[in-house]
Structures are given as C-alpha cells and as structure tokens.
Length: 98
Image (cartoon, rainbow, N blue to C red; front, top):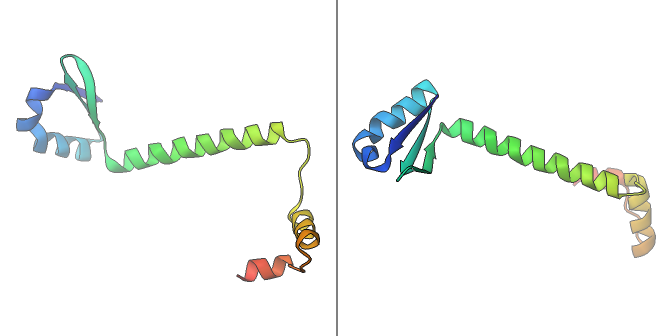
C-alpha cells in the first residue's frame, strides 16, 4: 500500500509515518505541488531492492560479455599464459592458499 502526502503534512506526521512504514510494511510518497519528491520504505526493503538491481545489472553485463566473446579460457590457460609471459611458475594451489 502506498500513502501519498503533501509536504506540509509531513512535519506533524513523521513519527506516525515512520512507525507505519516500519510496522505495516507500507510505502509513503511525499509530494510537493502534486509532484512526487521522496518515498519512505522499510530499510530492508530498500537494501533488498538495491541488491536485486545490482544482481540484474551484473547478470546483464555477464550476458553481454559472453555474447561478445568468441573464446573463453580456463583458469589453467590463464595461469599458463601468465607464467610464460612473466617467466614465473605460479600454480593454482598457491593462489588458493593466499
């Protein structure tokens, strides 16, 4: 449920609004001159929403990376190329131990 208030109403209602949003899981939109300015939501709702958005962005970036690459390399291939390029002998077990 979303409550809509004019900005002038907020000052006297803030404590009540915070309790309502927190306890009843409602959302409040605060308007000024008929235009939405601020929304109040539970903190856990906001963090879950932001995490979901970040996951969706990461997923989209991964899909783009996969479709734009013609070849993939295993970790062993990458380490082997690194070792040859830098004339070193790094092994996976050493990387995992750090």
